[in-house]
Length: 86
Image: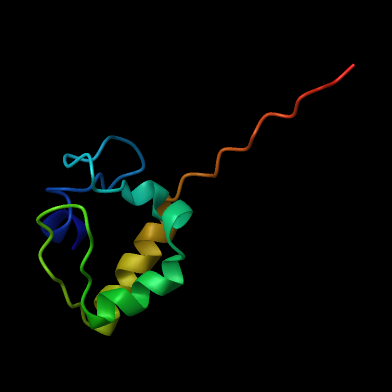
């Protein structure tokens, strides 16, 4: 489903850049949005502000699958380096 509906704009794998620079990479979505909130958006119809994204509405089983996939590819958050002060 991600390949069919999303890959033309989003990087849908663990690595790589999105074809549309304004479209977030799927591997970093949890840093931008709580994934549980995306489930509701997917069920009601998602509209975003990164250009010509069509409105999508998915069935519950499709949403569960997409959210599970998103969870499986999330990059760990980068931690700030600790500074040692002498």
